[in-house]
Image 1 (cartoon, helix red, strand yellow):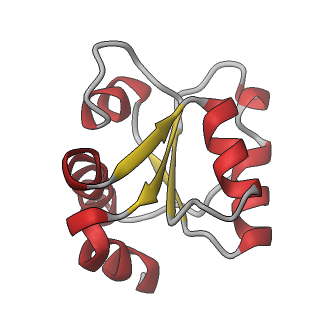
Image 2 (cartoon, one colour):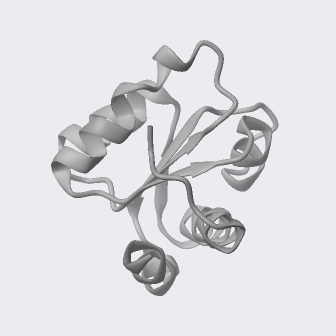
Length: 111
């Protein structure tokens, strides 16, 4: 899976998703996220750690690492869905156009 990260990095990831949603473009859900990584469009990927069964998203961190995309494991799919601006939980989100989240993504990538 994606590397364990600090609470601060997780908060920055949620913030980056919210900013990118407002000023750029995000993709939600396993299929959309997988496609955006494969096509080289993903700038940052977030996956929820409470996915059941975990096999649903197991390939995403591996694919992201292969393509050199930062992949952050966040706490819950509910929080991830909320950050993405939807009322339902989502297991994965990819930022495909940073918008004003460029600086946040750079900070997250360095950690």
